[in-house]
Structure formats: structure tokens, C-alpha cells
Image 1: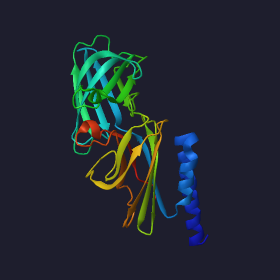
Image 2: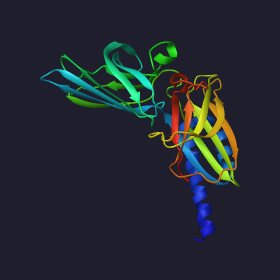
Image 3: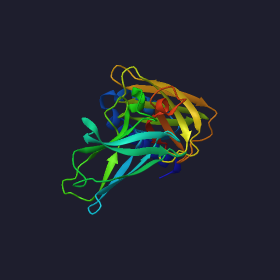
Image 4: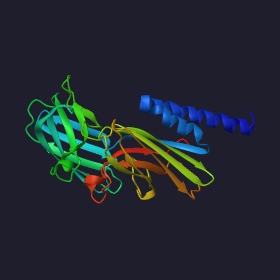
Length: 281
């Protein structure tokens, strides 16, 4: 196969992959986005946008001391942010009262947050029917600081003394959005298409291309400002940004970040609700 034919084949395969991803993420609203992806020629990359933050919690119960140790790790948080956390009765969709207070999840400069708490006198061990919840912070009031940004249900039917629980999207507003970003570079012009579903109708969201990765936001500086996303009546949003004088799309060096609001001066509004690493060049 000649170089030209091989290159053309790779572009066709890449375009087909992108169309499959769009259809999987967006279903019925995919046709217009797919048409845009087909029509733009050039060097292409993409970012799959998933809810952030995400991570896990480890629960370990000591039968002798009846101490329960709860460790949390999350990635994709606002850098250097603080987030209240609790174990609640009930699940993430129907959360009940607080069962146990946990130490705050504190993020470092890379947006990686950790917390460790030892709870005394936990009779009977790790129970099913609990949930671990992390809030937007840095406090629990007003309401936008209380928003649950990561949650995981605890199920322990076999009465294990150690359990790992995934923490991810919640049922709170804008906290279960998903999407895709398509990046095309031609003649030093970068075209960035971003499409997201699962937003609050009418909500407006700042977005950027940052330097680093979703998992380690270092240095995390904004490389390019993107046009705000504005959700329609169905909670879907698309935005296309054209950026001039771009030399290349680097491999494994950029990420696309969608924020909860356009008010980015504090962690409450800055809250990164979706993130995706740029890949597939």
C-alpha cells in the first residue's frame, strides 16, 4: 500500500471511529455533529469528556478494635481545593442523613484529592445501604457549595472487612454530563468542536484546553480559551472555536475541561464537571 493510500485509509478509519464515538455518546442528536466531523479535513484528534472528579474510596474495618478506616482519592478536582465528605445512609440517588463525618478531601496543585478518616466504635463492620459523598465545597453552604460532585454506593453482602468503592457522577445538577471534543488542525488553524449532554437546560459553562492531563493537571495552565457552552432546552450543548496560528496538536499533553459555571474566581464556580484527554492524533 502506498504512503498516500495508507494515510487516506488511516484518516477514513479515524473518521469512522469518531462517528461511532459520537453516536454512542449522543444518540439522536448525533447527525449534525457527525456532519461537522466529516466536513472538516486535516490532522484530527479527540477527547472523550467524562464526569470529574472521579476516583475511589477504600473502607477497612478492624473487628478487634471496631475501627473503620475510610480513605478517599479523587482526580480532576479544582487545584488546591477543599471538599467536605460524609458517609450517608441510603444510596447516591436517594441519600439519607449523615451516618459518619469524614475528613475533608483536600486537592493538591495537580487536582488530586485525598482524605483519610478513622471512625471508632463501628459495630458490625461495613454495612450495605451506605453511600460515600463528596461535596463541591469548600463549605456546605450556600447551596452551590453543598452540591454532591462525587458519590459511590456501598454494597457488602458478604460482610467483607475491606471494600473498594468507585466514586463518580452524581444526580446533582450538571454532575452527570458527558460529551466529546473533536480537534482538527489544518494550515495552522485549529478547529475545536465540543458537544456535551446531560446539562441543566439554559446553563452556561466555561471551557478551555489546558496543559497537562485530567488525572494530573500539571501545570494546568490554560492553553486556549474556548467558546462557552450554552445548554438548550434538552440539556445538550455544542460550541465550535476556531484558533489561528497553532503549530501542532501535541500527544498526551492537552486536556479539555468543562466548568460548572463561567464564574471561575473560586473553587465553587470553577468546579470541573467534565474532562477529557486529547488523544488519537
